[in-house]
Length: 303
Image 1 (cartoon, helix red, strand yellow):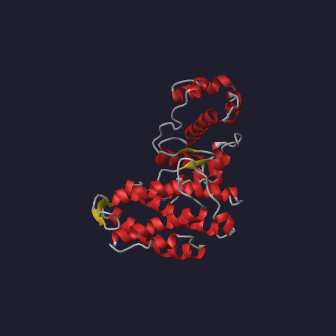
Image 2 (image 1 turned 45 degrees about the horizontal axis):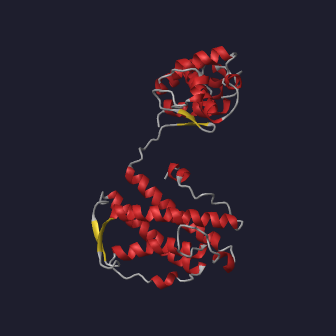
Image 3 (image 1 turned 120 degrees about the vertical axis):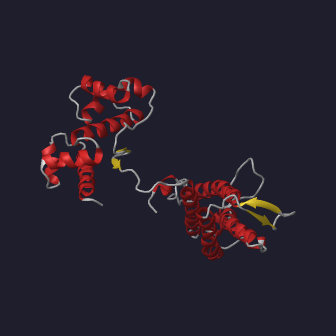
């Protein structure tokens, strides 16, 4: 990374901590980076295409738009938080940036981000987000979703170990499905689904009997083998661009031909339903820390 880019990253850190310090001058921010005001202005302008003061005003306006869309705070309160001395001054600045006044925008919110050369923006709830150094491809996203599925299945198994047999085998009522579903049976199917497809791709038999009242220890052992094997398979076909390649599933009666992409989509779709049922059942039994098992945060994390 260049020296200018290093200083710009330092400026972002300082700015993130000083967004609400409206007494802090540009000289103060430069001083925190051991730079002169002249050098800070030159560095930020060269990297971001904006002066530090204009950059800060834009970030504060983006945060104000977020506040308008997600809170019931008055426009004046939001204006003061953004460093404006009056409702009128804030309205002029907001209208210039978003094309409509804050009151009208709150009724029909659109984009939060204001176009900027640097593509650095306010990131809710309270930070700044640099543009990604590496663009995420559809293949990357697909692999991350499978990674999340394997990880979450492991977390489910570990939490299932905290429950009694009665809790594991208590029926999960779903009035549109005749299957008798329990935490145990759903966890076993989550692991078994990966094991079944591993077997299908390798053209070997799958023993369905293992899923009959499976123990948590067995779930752990099977997942330790089948999870990495399934993930490796997904990574390989994604990296090689072979999602449309086909394989014969001899486990079906009669045998059927599927694409790898179709198989992965099938696993993620049905696994999502089962995972949601399990995490809600776990929460009912006092183990709520998996929330909804949502992959949203997971896929946004760096590799």
